Image (cartoon, rainbow, N blue to C red; front, side, top):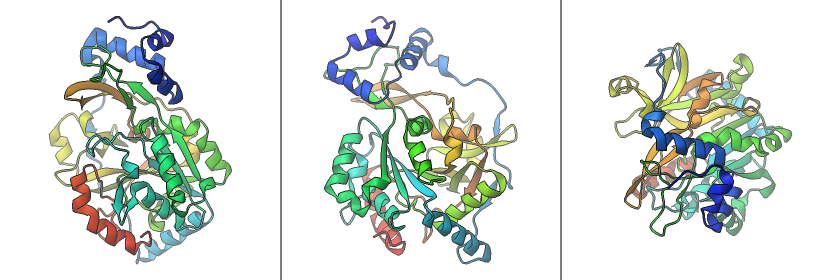
Length: 382
């Protein structure tokens, strides 16, 4: 199969429904065709990272452990965080675009977690605690947008004013085969996927970020839809706000103690600069094992810093789709740490103030449900 010369020719080879979805969800035809040609001509070796300074474990002064809520400093941060929340300066961004391949390929945000309340419902109830002062920004995808809107309508937005809920969509693209062909499903249709949470800055900048800032928004908590413990803790809010005001910090990553089963990213230093790195980019496991903390993908941003254009790499990711291997190119939101003034906060993994309980599989939910219920009840969300 020859590679189309442009997006128009590509669309001529696809069914009308697929073309409509690509147009609606910001398909970047030029970028896709460029990647397709690289894969077809050079294989996956075309996307190996360029050599550069090797990553090293973060130094002892790079990981700032948050104070306890009961300490003098902790109470100061809580007060500062509450002021920002009550003033309408804080919003939450929920990464709601994933395709939940390990959860049964459903719209995960709409699935019940505790007492019939869904993942989306938990996020809305967290925001509702602040009496309309906190905006909710939902980054959806082609796989979740319509179901999310229906779910919110059916549940009356879980008590949140719809005017404070901003929905926006990330990109969609087409899967390829490892040998550089268009990947098709068992029905012969081109296979679609959402292109990763690294779409965040581009997607926000289409309209939503400006609306948030016009309403007085200054700080954003970004978290995955399936980590329901990533709630608005005034102490953590205050920590980022203080660092932003005092030192110009633009991005804060939350890290927790690592467990053997963790997968994902970790903080590293590259040429003396603190960054987040995904495990698939690590040069060896020996380095990874020396880093005692794990990136939760709970990220705090100063909104103004996201009002920019960022060039993030698109990495080839292998996925099993219908028993076949497919290649999809994704961006990683943690790589914004290369461009922004970045810090890492070491936060509790579990316990009363725990902030990390990812639910990737249905088995994870069964194992964690009792803990989730107890913690969220204490936080006034349930």
